[in-house]
Image (cartoon, rainbow, N blue to C red; front, side, top):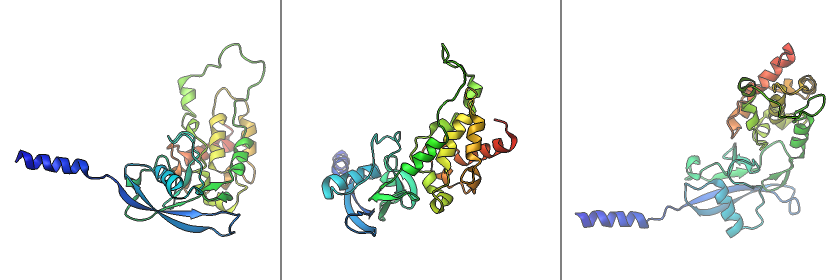
Amino acid sequence: MSTAIEDKVEAASKASPYITVTFRVRRFNPEVSAEATWQDFQVEIDPKERVLDGLHKIKWDLDGSLTFRRSCAHGICGSDAMRINGRNRLACKTLIKDINPEKPITIEPIKGLTVLKDLVVDMEPFFQAYRDVMPFLITKGNEPTRERLQSAEDRERFDDTTKCILCAACTSSCPVFWNDGQYFGPAAIVNAHRFIFDSRDEAGEQRLEILNDKDGVWRCRTTFNCTDACPRGIEVTKAIQEVKRALITRRF
């Protein structure tokens, strides 16, 4: 009996963990065609690996022309945000086994931004909105001779919105942004929130006036797409509502 059990253990150890997964990628090359097309790739991959690993296998072994952004591969840089099975995600944080590998995995660029090639979009409008809300500490007077101290309670007030990694997953999941690229978008508002509610900052009123613009915070329709899309778990919709409330009450 022990031999039979050992044989089963040995057979299990030799069994390959790899499965064949179809990656259905939306391709676009403006030098070839003005229209995007879908292309299927068959990839042998361990289901415990990530979508990013699958894209690497395609680029390195099957088609070197496939173009996408990635950097740290650990959910910190935010550069590999894309639509995976119709939902904004980070490719480096999405496991194959969690998105039903028995069916084709669809990969396409995030929406609302101009596609430059394949999965790469023009991020400049997104970062311009970010710059417009002045995402840095603004104070008056001379530089301090020591660090600006802040209580734990004051820090907690904006702790959630410090987690943003500027991946654009929230902004590019917003229907308002899809239809009007002039809207600041959730990410810019989140980063404004981070400083508006910072007790050390002195430009809260100025940021509120920027977001009081016709393309500002009032364009939000509270669909919660942004909150669902955030890979960092930020309560994006809540932050937007707090900025709206601060505009009405002028208390922050």
